Image (cartoon, rainbow, N blue to C red; front, top):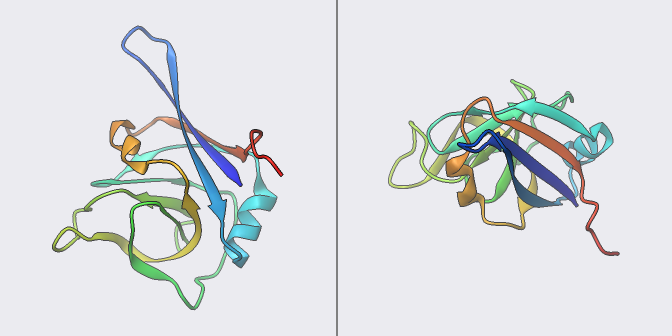
Length: 135
């Protein structure tokens, strides 16, 4: 399991952290992300999707998709970034969550991804092993 920590300043200038725990799927992309931990990046937004650079290279997997469910952790191989859709994007139809292109699904959020609605572009995200994980 890994944890995404989003750090953004509150109105008083204090850093406020929001967390999403992620259960990894058994995929080559998930394995590569796990090996790259820890890393940090700046968030970009596109409709109700956040994305950020990821320091891996991965090929598009055979089961890559561009329509996802809230909580699916996606990796965009063409742009080497993680994408998390939590609602409609500018190209969505009928309430679906449609990413810009096909992505590898490498994990599942264990926490409510609707909190991403409060994450602004430029917010820093740290991706790391979940230290609270119990074995």
